[in-house]
Image: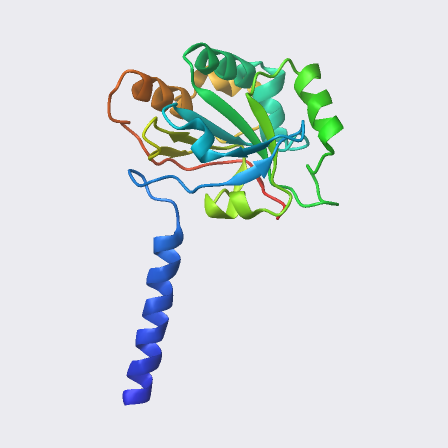
Length: 200
């Protein structure tokens, strides 16, 4: 009986550790150190005092394509850049998998789509993605100027690859980002992300 209790306690401890390791709303966002498509290294601490939006992306994912062919993603990037928010696109696809790109290809994609991120982070190891529990593309996060995680989830409420659904959807990411800019609590800090699984 004592042995069973010990195993139960160990299992419970493992569960608690796993849960505690996941990113938590209102807690400090996981730090990262990742090289971007221009060879520059970025850490979360570099953006202290600024709001930050993280966008996990995969240019081959139809759910990502939905938001780029419609210019929805670029519009959001520009809107928040104008509000002095740092927008970082993150590619966590491992080498040889769908969505993995060279630095040159990442820059080509940014230019061809008129995208407006402050940087494209190449998270080939997947360490940053796992730290944030990023599961799909697009998976979106908002970090406040104090470094705390304020939103994580979907870009909007309609989980399809059809651009025509964007105007009908509840704009989760836009709403959260705008509430942060207004100094208000995020009304829906966690929502369900949708998209293609990240190829770790």
